[in-house]
Image (cartoon, one colour):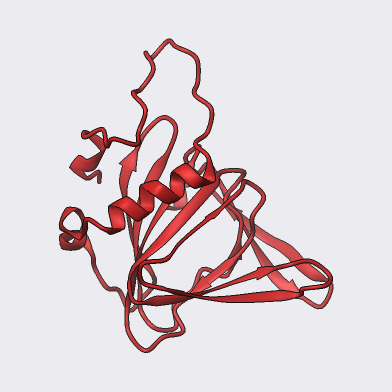
Length: 175
């Protein structure tokens, strides 16, 4: 299900090339951060779509374009993604409501990094980024996520003493 946002071309989105034209380069992480930040500041365009699910995180794609996509996700306390990558896509996410926690590996000297991400904060990352996002707060949270190119796969990982170990992969048919 798509939101009418896909039909509107926001000021930061380039025009689509002709169907037989060359493929566009992926959007940069900073551009994706701008996309999610601007959308997070316009809740009237998405708040009516939000659902809270006790079974699992709820999500809906808002924009599906040739060079990027945008997802709306709700999180109840205790829900998390587990460590995952983005299949080579660049990405960004903004916390629109609530607060989340992000875990990532910072290298041998830094170890496990834990960041609190309050409402109004946006994070961007490159194509090799692996992280775990979770709601450790006492209330729900809502986020907006953008990926370029659109997600084609996501691998999941377990964090073990020796680092991250890839455990599974999923594709768009599972979303």
